[in-house]
Image (tube, rainbow, N blue to C red; front, side):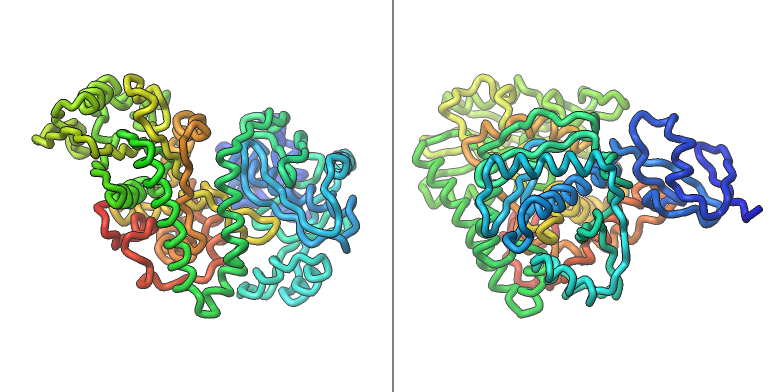
Length: 554
């Protein structure tokens, strides 16, 4: 009998022969889980099921509905789509299939080549995807030298991956196979295509939507929730990236290594300033009295409100930035989450009636003593900050609930101008690997939390799920109602943030629950070349996070 290894799960010990695959072990535990197990966590490290048991260890299991399991599902859907497209269309006629960005519950896919993207073609690709799912083909991982990969990828015409690997220090690269078709993906895959229980593909605008199941129901594709306003702002950023020649990390790294970083910064900052100036002009033209700015965490709302205020001055207006945080209820009155923790993300955490009374009085020309919230004592204070609106005064109100009309229910609609702001990342790792907007904001938040509050990356990661849930409930449902959208993402920012966040992530040890997420982000940041921050303007939105801003942003 061979060597026996002991695994510990939920404080119970089980014995298996050394070399047993995790796929075999999972069969004994699947009955304890609602959805299919797709990954295992061995001594705090994620492993795919094709790996085998090597020593005594602690083990846990990740379902397809889990944080990392759902990422593997979406990644596998992307690979399935690309493979199917190359099966249906002659590869020699394909210039590029690109996973562009998230929209609703799906990804927008663009294609380019010597063919016409018709509804009939999209249907054939979808049918091919379903065939491969039914065949239950394994996703096979193989290791190659970087040089060999460059040559192989070149034959597929995937030149953006080729650029990416120019800046990889590793001598080996893991590639995934579906049959003979191979591709590179950042992160883990499902064990096989049969694990994909729900996926759809349909025509949308000039491309396609790859619609996928959500975490809480991996067996069902939700109704596609179209967001035309958001789509347009994402496409605008995508087109600007293409014009700059920086659609992927490989292209960004080349710009940095060729000495073009300073020019890139100036162009990006000029573009943002131009868009802010256009917003100010529109607000002034419509003679709005209340500018309501809202967006998810770490969008740069505070810096944006200051820069917008400056541009409003150039339009002959007198802006007054106001933070909705100053209208928090006293902390003892804050509503609670089911966990018993204060729900600071809820609209009910604000004194809505008092806010409306104050704003209505200002609109009537009355003088109002404006509050400030003391985050140390947890109470609202009045320090004689008297405000009275004149004919050219504009209140620039910033907070996560700004787009929700329940917040400002007494204010006339015609007096409000609503702006949705978010860091909508359109830079890709390569043509098939997206950079999520959420990751960009999370990295911003970790850097700022540490700099302004001394908060560890563990603390930020620990609260991030509650923050995200609050955004889903309180911000995203209202984004399409905005009069305007502003994208605060800068194509170069992850090369800037890299040097600030890496030490924070390296500080998270394997025994911590946040270790896997820290490891994922560290691997992700390896793709980027770091840059010096000295040349970044002091009014840049990224200064809100790394420090050195001319604005009072913490």
